[in-house]
Length: 318
Image 1: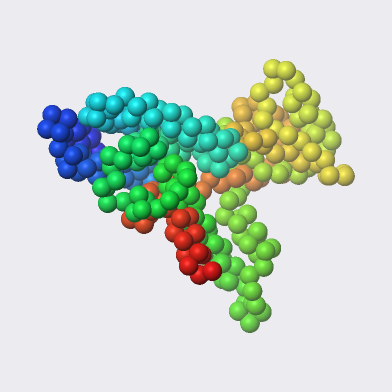
Image 2: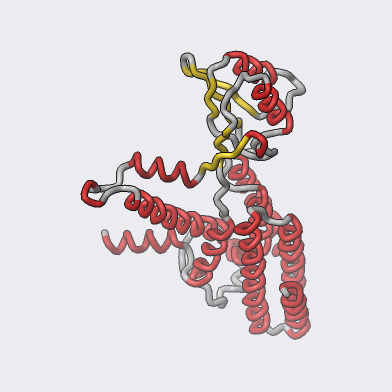
């Protein structure tokens, strides 16, 4: 379905180029924004149902963004449009990579966000004093922000996620307490519920590559020494760190890249030798983030940048 819309969008832009009709150009950009929303919706489906965003979908939006910006450059006979889109996307890629590395989101979110940045880079052309699209009916053009529009979408998504998580945590905290003993939500309540929301327990047989292991406690120093020994090897592919707290030891994943084959083999070996006892492992549960990006995108189209709105509201109040 989105392929036919994509073709129609490109044809519209080609007609614009031959007729020089800016009204049709604006209409084509509106269709383009709808195509982006459609692709995000498909990504949401995969993220919610399967917990993964297909690489093919990320590739589609990246190629689509490249073609769209190429045609814009031809329409206006200005190569800066395409160059700007590549430069902006390179910057967003660097930021996205850092967010992926620290575990903010998964690889699928990272790749699709790059494509989203490429597809929406034309909204930042005012930074080059090319105000071709100011007549697009998007509130963002009436707001003053100093960062790219794609960052607005990300921040919108984060704010929506925080609100929904706050509501979920509040609901769980209230539900699990007797009302007559309940005076206010404590920090400990929020911490406990949030930990439950972002943690799941799996059996040792279900461990797989990429799972981010949380603290696994044990009492045998042999396991502690073995993990550190492997960690210090030059050719080691382990992503575990071992620590000691007095007579208690624990290991966990070093970063968001999660368990490697070598890690899983080591853990199974330690368990079979009865060096570690517990067969249940707590891993970080991935919260699907792409739906929040989509909600941030919809909010961006209808309301603009939430941070700018909140800032404006605060100025009015104070």
